[in-house]
Amino acid sequence: MATEQRTIAATGNGIVAEAYRQIEPDVICAYPITPQTTIVEEFAKFVAAGKVTTEFVTVESEHSSMSACIGSSSAGARTFTATSSQGLALMYEELFVASGLRLPIVMVNANRALSAPINIHGDHSDVMGARDTGWVILFAESAQEAYDQTIIAPRIAEANLLPVMPTLDGFITTHAIARAQVVDDAVVKDFVGTWKPEHALLDREPIMVGGFANLGNTYMKIKAAQRVAADGALASIKTIADEWAAITGRPYDHVEGYGLEDADLVIVILGSAAGNARTVARDLRASGRKVGIVKLRTYRPFPTAELAAALSRAKAVAIMDRSDSFGSFAGPLALDTMAALYAHDLHPQIRRYIYGLGGADVKLEYFRHVYDDLEASLSGAADPGLTYLGID
Image 1 (cartoon, rainbow, N blue to C red):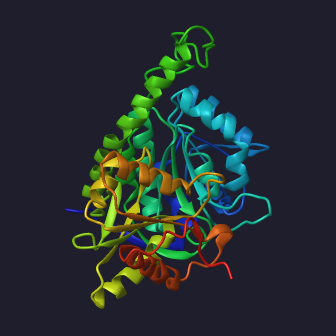
Image 2 (image 1 turned 135 degrees about the horizontal axis):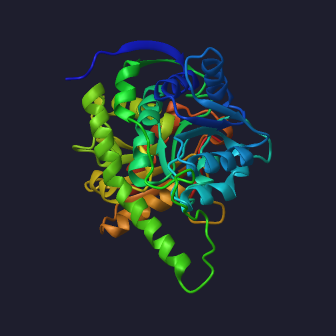
Image 3 (image 1 turned 180 degrees about the vertical axis):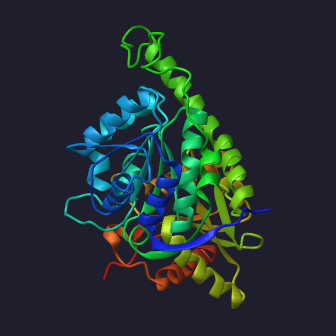
């Protein structure tokens, strides 16, 4: 039976900051950047008011922020930060250091476009640039999911010795006022527990961190172990999320489907626009059309088997990317999805779309158009190739 919860109304960032407060990490190293700023701004207020004992370290850049996190986590502290867009890009080399050193850092990313041209609105270009850095990456559709994912994140990180990046879409989720169900502080504290690493720089026994691996195949052995950890994290994420679901009554699956029991035409999507797709699918199903959607919550490690199972009866699949992978056959989600289908010998008609870049409108009519495209594909219509939706 789910524990008693209270309803709060706040921005998505405010709700994430509340989760940070309830977890009360040992250290937060942070630098502001739109649209993430209010996460660390709100948390700084908690620090100033004495509501947490967290050491809040202000730094001169996002690169410094992740560098400080690496030092803090190496010393054995439960360490958090948050960032967005150019900030995440500025951290790039440090993202590999954090994962390569197997440090359980948690960093919420407010998904935002990358310059140029300058744009501060939400898309997935920044986080997709980090998809191969060795971090666990989670996508929230709503502020409620962002709250839940933030709380399960330290457990995932510490169970697998991998950094974790929960994400929510810039402005659409970060700045919109939303309702969320939150549990008592004591419940969160009990769920996340305390963190005592097996090895830390401050322990009496000396250890080497970030050693030189330039001889033979030492580097490859370390990366192979990192791959094993990343692959193994998929089951761990589900186990920890199920534990949180037992407390809250909110189930968490890597892949969430709607209408898949009989859907011939299916959209695959990440993040906040899943609600738009679901609204259109609900309307079309009411008129008798067999349509559905698949939303991924876990993106890294990629839930290949779960996604293939969800799409196993689909006749036509549209994959919606809110970022592009320039010069490749498709956007990043489409590339991963097609690989999953191929690996499981599934061959539906595929259509590839880019939408909502730089916060461009994501209209319901776009999803109706996509379902029409899928239906036409079953009648032999030629594949138009990678399509940018919503360009006048």
